[in-house]
Length: 191
Length: 286
Image (cartoon, rainbow over all chains, first blue to last red; front, side):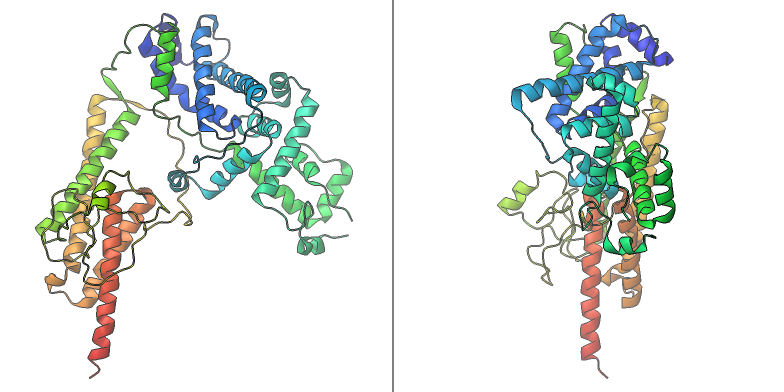
């Protein structure tokens, strides 16, 4: 485990506010990123989930044995907070798709058009597809890990992932004739 | 023949193809292209930068942690080292202020734009945040009467509105638009802890760089000034350089109001000079 994290965790277990803040500053961006994408770029929801993840993590610090890296452990808590938050929210409020001002002109200036389009397309995916795509293609979890988190089989996870990738592709580069390649491409296809 | 469907292609991004699928891919350019696009898409997803959490998120989290008695005592101020994010923020503020001061100094030293009384809406607009792309009717900290206006300048940071321009211009829009291809995202910066001495040195270097930049702007501004006695071609060349210089700077700091001001003012002056040259060409037919 990272020596700095190790030291900070030791202090944070004693309730040291400074150590908790230092841990937050080191890992907040990673935590926020995953929950924000799982939230479909709903910033308020993402902050709620990130906060929940941190509270859970700080509460659970005494049980952290250091078998895994702190980052990995914390990331998993963040994902679980988001997935649990999503389930709670779905029961309470039903489905919501929020496309707010996340894609501000500031973001346009700071990142590439392609990346903005990717983020937007992800936010437009149905919830189930988005979760699997974010966890697999963005965060790098295996199908088995995702299946465990979501309570589904690895096969179901794969199926959702392939649907999500295909949907993303259509969102990013819609074809003129539905799912089929364009006519000129058809002509180029050897028989 | 039937193409491979989207979900099959999506599977082939990271799984081996069945023999019949491999055979089709060998023969079908369209499906090969589609698969390549899907692979590029998947690769790009894995390279997305992590967004920053909201600035106030820690404050809210800290309050909750204290409510739940998960932390105790005041969060101590860190001593002996400074988090680089803080240094960046401080440097940005310093540059902003220095840029405003440098701009004002340039104009006042060489007889810059005339201070113009702010109308009520303009005065209200002064409290608006830094203008952003695509935002209509933004007002910049800009020597908007024209780069070479002869009247003295207002103080540092004064917002100058072109209430009585010599050559009425349509409202200026920001130099960069959201439609323009933005620069590639910078690689994710890892938090770096530095000593106070290193932070001070970094800030000093930034200030020196800013001073050099201001000198470059001043040099071109002086050359382009109608009062300099330089011929129109020389002034035009200086304006071209000034526009190029500030344009390049805006690629890195697109929202900097001072650089935007210089850029827009230089562009306006170049247009004015062009019109002047065109008028001269018509009247001096002999």
